[in-house]
Length: 200
Image (cartoon, rainbow, N blue to C red):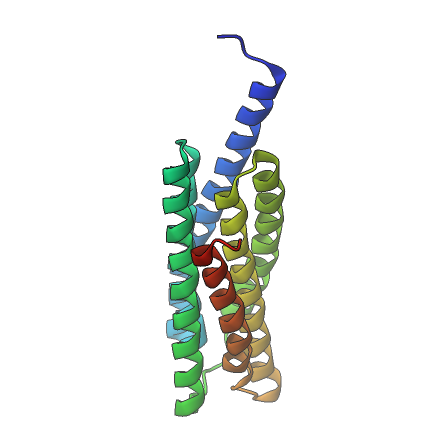
Protein backbone atom coordinates (compact mmCIF):
# COMPACT_ATOMS: atom_id res chain seq x y z
CA UNK A 1 0.00 0.00 0.00
CA UNK A 2 1.45 3.37 -1.05
CA UNK A 3 1.50 6.18 1.49
CA UNK A 4 0.36 9.39 -0.16
CA UNK A 5 0.76 12.96 1.14
CA UNK A 6 -3.00 12.98 1.73
CA UNK A 7 -2.71 9.85 3.92
CA UNK A 8 0.20 11.34 5.83
CA UNK A 9 -1.74 14.55 6.39
CA UNK A 10 -4.71 12.58 7.69
CA UNK A 11 -2.46 10.67 10.08
CA UNK A 12 -0.92 13.91 11.34
CA UNK A 13 -4.37 15.37 11.96
CA UNK A 14 -5.48 12.23 13.79
CA UNK A 15 -2.42 12.42 16.05
CA UNK A 16 -3.13 16.10 16.67
CA UNK A 17 -6.75 15.36 17.54
CA UNK A 18 -5.71 12.63 19.96
CA UNK A 19 -3.05 14.90 21.50
CA UNK A 20 -5.68 17.60 22.11
CA UNK A 21 -7.95 15.06 23.80
CA UNK A 22 -5.17 13.58 25.94
CA UNK A 23 -4.20 17.10 27.02
CA UNK A 24 -7.82 17.79 27.97
CA UNK A 25 -7.96 14.52 29.90
CA UNK A 26 -4.74 15.20 31.81
CA UNK A 27 -5.76 18.77 32.66
CA UNK A 28 -9.14 17.72 34.01
CA UNK A 29 -7.72 14.82 36.04
CA UNK A 30 -5.37 17.26 37.78
CA UNK A 31 -8.22 19.75 38.01
CA UNK A 32 -10.43 17.38 39.99
CA UNK A 33 -7.76 17.17 42.70
CA UNK A 34 -7.13 20.94 42.76
CA UNK A 35 -10.84 21.79 42.74
CA UNK A 36 -11.59 19.32 45.53
CA UNK A 37 -8.95 20.95 47.73
CA UNK A 38 -10.17 24.47 46.87
CA UNK A 39 -13.84 23.55 47.38
CA UNK A 40 -13.21 22.01 50.80
CA UNK A 41 -11.07 24.96 51.90
CA UNK A 42 -13.60 27.62 50.82
CA UNK A 43 -16.74 25.50 51.39
CA UNK A 44 -17.63 26.44 47.80
CA UNK A 45 -20.49 24.65 46.07
CA UNK A 46 -19.52 26.29 42.76
CA UNK A 47 -15.99 24.88 42.87
CA UNK A 48 -17.27 21.44 43.86
CA UNK A 49 -19.73 21.58 40.98
CA UNK A 50 -17.00 22.63 38.56
CA UNK A 51 -15.09 19.52 39.64
CA UNK A 52 -18.10 17.43 38.56
CA UNK A 53 -18.05 19.24 35.23
CA UNK A 54 -14.43 18.14 34.84
CA UNK A 55 -15.62 14.54 35.18
CA UNK A 56 -18.08 15.09 32.31
CA UNK A 57 -15.30 16.56 30.17
CA UNK A 58 -13.11 13.53 30.93
CA UNK A 59 -15.91 11.27 29.73
CA UNK A 60 -16.41 13.28 26.54
CA UNK A 61 -12.67 13.24 25.74
CA UNK A 62 -12.56 9.48 26.28
CA UNK A 63 -15.42 9.07 23.79
CA UNK A 64 -13.55 11.07 21.13
CA UNK A 65 -10.31 9.11 21.58
CA UNK A 66 -12.34 5.92 21.20
CA UNK A 67 -14.03 7.22 18.03
CA UNK A 68 -10.79 8.47 16.44
CA UNK A 69 -9.24 5.02 16.89
CA UNK A 70 -11.85 3.41 14.61
CA UNK A 71 -13.98 4.00 11.58
CA UNK A 72 -17.56 3.58 10.48
CA UNK A 73 -20.71 5.66 10.50
CA UNK A 74 -22.34 3.55 13.24
CA UNK A 75 -19.36 4.17 15.54
CA UNK A 76 -19.50 7.89 14.77
CA UNK A 77 -23.23 8.13 15.50
CA UNK A 78 -22.79 6.28 18.79
CA UNK A 79 -19.96 8.64 19.80
CA UNK A 80 -22.07 11.70 18.96
CA UNK A 81 -24.94 10.41 21.09
CA UNK A 82 -22.58 9.87 24.01
CA UNK A 83 -21.33 13.45 23.67
CA UNK A 84 -24.95 14.65 23.44
CA UNK A 85 -25.57 12.82 26.70
CA UNK A 86 -22.60 14.67 28.23
CA UNK A 87 -24.16 18.00 27.20
CA UNK A 88 -27.48 16.96 28.77
CA UNK A 89 -25.77 15.92 32.01
CA UNK A 90 -23.89 19.22 32.10
CA UNK A 91 -27.15 21.16 31.67
CA UNK A 92 -28.84 19.21 34.49
CA UNK A 93 -25.85 19.71 36.77
CA UNK A 94 -25.77 23.46 36.12
CA UNK A 95 -29.52 23.84 36.61
CA UNK A 96 -29.58 21.89 39.88
CA UNK A 97 -26.44 23.50 41.28
CA UNK A 98 -27.42 27.07 40.40
CA UNK A 99 -30.96 26.67 41.76
CA UNK A 100 -29.77 25.02 44.97
CA UNK A 101 -27.14 27.70 45.68
CA UNK A 102 -29.61 30.54 45.05
CA UNK A 103 -32.37 28.93 47.13
CA UNK A 104 -30.05 28.11 50.02
CA UNK A 105 -28.40 31.55 49.97
CA UNK A 106 -25.08 29.80 50.50
CA UNK A 107 -22.12 32.17 51.04
CA UNK A 108 -18.74 30.54 50.31
CA UNK A 109 -15.44 31.82 51.67
CA UNK A 110 -12.84 33.51 49.48
CA UNK A 111 -10.69 31.09 47.47
CA UNK A 112 -7.40 32.38 46.00
CA UNK A 113 -6.59 28.84 44.82
CA UNK A 114 -9.97 28.56 43.11
CA UNK A 115 -9.57 31.95 41.44
CA UNK A 116 -6.10 31.09 40.14
CA UNK A 117 -7.07 27.64 38.87
CA UNK A 118 -10.29 28.70 37.12
CA UNK A 119 -8.50 31.64 35.46
CA UNK A 120 -5.81 29.38 33.97
CA UNK A 121 -8.36 26.66 33.15
CA UNK A 122 -10.51 29.10 31.18
CA UNK A 123 -7.53 30.08 29.00
CA UNK A 124 -6.47 26.45 28.49
CA UNK A 125 -9.99 25.25 27.61
CA UNK A 126 -10.55 28.07 25.09
CA UNK A 127 -7.23 27.22 23.40
CA UNK A 128 -8.09 23.50 23.31
CA UNK A 129 -11.59 24.22 21.98
CA UNK A 130 -10.09 26.32 19.16
CA UNK A 131 -7.65 23.54 18.31
CA UNK A 132 -10.36 20.89 18.29
CA UNK A 133 -12.63 22.99 16.07
CA UNK A 134 -9.88 23.46 13.47
CA UNK A 135 -8.63 19.88 13.58
CA UNK A 136 -12.15 18.46 13.55
CA UNK A 137 -13.04 20.53 10.48
CA UNK A 138 -9.85 19.45 8.68
CA UNK A 139 -10.56 15.80 9.49
CA UNK A 140 -14.24 16.20 8.66
CA UNK A 141 -14.90 14.70 12.11
CA UNK A 142 -18.22 15.85 13.61
CA UNK A 143 -17.34 13.96 16.79
CA UNK A 144 -14.14 15.94 17.43
CA UNK A 145 -15.81 19.20 16.39
CA UNK A 146 -18.80 18.57 18.66
CA UNK A 147 -16.62 17.62 21.63
CA UNK A 148 -14.74 20.85 21.02
CA UNK A 149 -17.98 22.61 21.93
CA UNK A 150 -18.05 20.65 25.20
CA UNK A 151 -14.57 22.03 25.86
CA UNK A 152 -15.80 25.53 24.94
CA UNK A 153 -18.60 25.22 27.51
CA UNK A 154 -16.01 24.07 30.04
CA UNK A 155 -14.07 27.27 29.35
CA UNK A 156 -17.22 29.39 29.62
CA UNK A 157 -18.14 27.67 32.87
CA UNK A 158 -14.63 28.26 34.24
CA UNK A 159 -15.05 31.94 33.36
CA UNK A 160 -18.47 32.07 35.05
CA UNK A 161 -17.09 30.41 38.20
CA UNK A 162 -14.10 32.78 38.13
CA UNK A 163 -16.34 35.85 37.86
CA UNK A 164 -18.50 34.54 40.70
CA UNK A 165 -15.48 33.89 42.92
CA UNK A 166 -14.01 37.33 42.22
CA UNK A 167 -17.31 39.16 42.80
CA UNK A 168 -17.85 37.18 46.00
CA UNK A 169 -14.35 38.07 47.22
CA UNK A 170 -14.39 41.74 46.27
CA UNK A 171 -18.04 42.75 46.54
CA UNK A 172 -19.72 39.97 48.50
CA UNK A 173 -21.97 39.10 45.50
CA UNK A 174 -22.36 35.41 46.35
CA UNK A 175 -25.20 34.97 43.82
CA UNK A 176 -23.16 35.98 40.73
CA UNK A 177 -21.85 32.50 39.93
CA UNK A 178 -25.18 30.57 40.08
CA UNK A 179 -26.83 33.32 38.03
CA UNK A 180 -24.25 32.92 35.27
CA UNK A 181 -24.83 29.16 35.34
CA UNK A 182 -28.34 29.60 33.97
CA UNK A 183 -26.97 31.11 30.74
CA UNK A 184 -24.86 28.01 30.19
CA UNK A 185 -27.84 25.73 30.85
CA UNK A 186 -29.51 27.10 27.71
CA UNK A 187 -26.37 26.63 25.61
CA UNK A 188 -25.77 23.06 26.78
CA UNK A 189 -29.41 22.05 26.19
CA UNK A 190 -29.31 23.56 22.70
CA UNK A 191 -26.20 21.58 21.81
CA UNK A 192 -27.71 18.35 23.17
CA UNK A 193 -30.92 18.91 21.17
CA UNK A 194 -29.01 19.56 17.95
CA UNK A 195 -26.96 16.38 18.39
CA UNK A 196 -29.95 14.14 19.08
CA UNK A 197 -32.02 15.64 16.26
CA UNK A 198 -29.13 15.55 13.77
CA UNK A 199 -29.14 19.32 13.35
CA UNK A 200 -25.43 19.61 14.24
